[in-house]
Amino acid sequence: EVQLLESGGDLVQPGGSLRLSCAASGFTFYDYAMSWVRQAPGKGLEWVSSISGSGGKTYYADSVKGRFTISRDNSKNIVYLQMNSLRAEDTAVYYCTKDRPSSKFYWGQGTLVAVSS
Amino acid sequence: DIQMTQSPSSLSASVRDRVTITCQASQDINNFLNWYQQKPGKAPKLLIYDAANLEAGVPSRFSGSGSGTDFTFTISSLQPEDAATYYCQQYDNFPYTFGQGTNLEIK
Image (tube, rainbow over the protein chains, first blue to last red):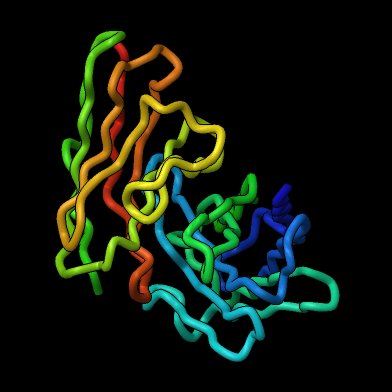
């Protein structure tokens, strides 16, 4: 059974940094790309970033490019999202997802990031 | 970026009604389209993948169809537990993009 467990969400001041983690189990981790998707309070879903199975290719939404960095440790089955220069508009629940090459995208339960002074 | 136009944004229907939600992509997405159900405080749950394939364990009253740029999600006989927000998502190209969501209410 696929399991994705996010952690690291917290209350942080504008301009601060945070690192999210997503621990994966139940599948061959390095075979799959992983993504982060966020949902601001009361809003829809927004894709944030993706990383290939090897970690060699990364992709970012324009809204986070230059501030966020996605990475993965295939020896530990963990994907990370390093978030710097945080803004109020980054406040959201952040989900990690298991995705390509499968079309079956599975989601973790999410972790809340709140950016406020 | 591929724009996903989902409609309606909300709807209210009765138990046993047939409900349809549409999603239109701004370009051909090669059927790389998923449909999700999200209940308050929960993560999205995959219902349909590759536009028309039912995820294991999902009731057969849920279905998806379409190709190219136009896609449809249908609940054949609405049940009380189907009250939720539904989203489409394309994963043909980065950035992956979502429809705006459809808030489904049971009358």
